Image (tube, rainbow, N blue to C red; front, top):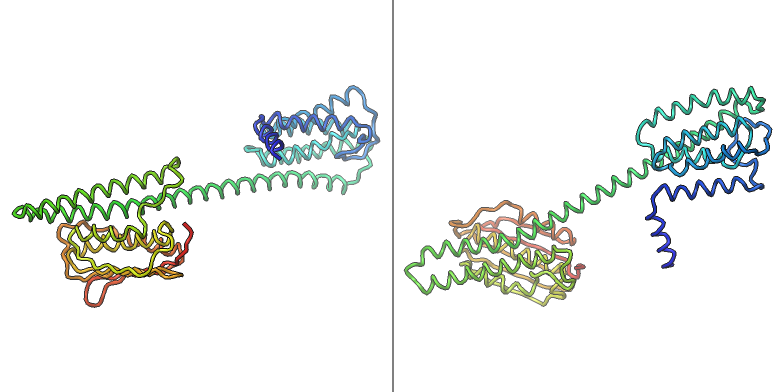
Length: 385
């Protein structure tokens, strides 16, 4: 099997003319086999004529142009057609005459320009051929000529079908490639949004708070240290994400943000000045799984929005790990302040909804009756990584 694959690979590497030349030579050699004399594509039904020196030239004219049937299909078709006409008029009735339907199929499949003109000219040329055969004593009736013409049209149609099928497949692959690129760009945009927005929002809020702590050196120092820690985490997450996007990254690399990081995420948000109550029930089945990763992103984006739109307001995070699903609820009261926090683009919640929907879960983000907002997600557990 391995040897066959190697031979197939070597064959595909050959120039297309060399590959098609093998077909031309094979047809030429087969034509010389006595048992195949009088066989092939025939019209007119003239009495067979014995081979002579001119017969071999006719055979060569019919067979050899097949070597360029894909590179120069029009040239191959014209030469093969000329050889077929000579074959029919001289009544050699060679097996090489089957080169005509082969050339027609190839022209229908590979001819790029002048397709209609070529078809019209060949159709017109068929009429004087039929008349000439009839004057030479051919016994073919009119319906026989019509049937033969329809067979040639069918050969051209097969080639046209192959051409359309190949074009449709190329278009399908182009659409798949474009959809893949779009999905990858969307995924990268989501990852960048999740990583950068959360860390930068925390840094902005912490820095804004530091402006009012100049009179309290101890609190100022701790706040600036928190800003530094947040920046370092941002750099670490960005580097890890770039490693994942690199095709040559280590295969054992995994997402840096998993369920095990929720405590660190909540603590970072607290350092940014957001009072967060965190409740966790159960344990993650697979800390590196897709469900746990999406759970982390839901909590991260929700806390980022809390920093942006309700800074300083009490926030409650509840995560429960079940056997079949992970439930997440993040609620924030509406009594906080937006001062100093950057605005949002709305991309975060849309990305979360898409992430949860992709795993077959449920997602909602609503305002609460008494103010604030609540984010809920139900993520199926055991989703493939």
